[in-house]
Length: 258
Image (tube, rainbow, N blue to C red; front, side, top):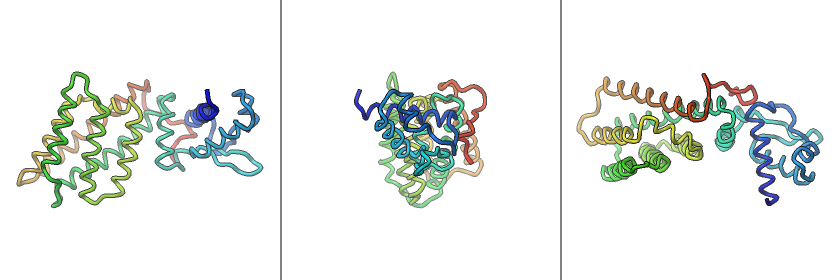
């Protein structure tokens, strides 16, 4: 095993301890000497491990003090959150809580995009959207649908809508959410808790609305929003089941949002 692999593996192990709450925000990470002794490595390699943790955003080095653990949920950006989510899978309750937050953010962006696109004057070429939904249906009808490919395609569809709407920041946030979810198989699977065919039906219905002369009524929009929320609740519940979370997700103190 190469030195870089050892550094990465040990850094991930220490990061998992932060995510699990074994190390609390504001405390010192184990020292270079302690890391070297626990993982049977020389001090130079241990220093690289702690440096890697700092580059991850999990710790901050202070001269004469050591590496102080950061509040990764409160202070971290999108990349830190992505890594925290990946590492949280060994702590199911934390993973379930984080996924619930991810889904809530994604739901808001997607719902707003669909409604704004429905009400807006700017439109993508109908053939462009139809071709994408046709591709989605082809994937859904295979004996073993590739959920990851389907989710990537659906995210791209929403991304196109956000581009037309000129919602650049929301598109960037959606891109980060997509990268976070697509890296975790259980998260991808959870998005298809209701089956892939339902996703095709929803997109077909949206295409019909966008191609019609009149838009949906207020009652139809309200019903769609209710169904959208129910679907996402099922997604969250399915993920909790897949990762083995029991009861309501409960974050550890060190990773709790401020």
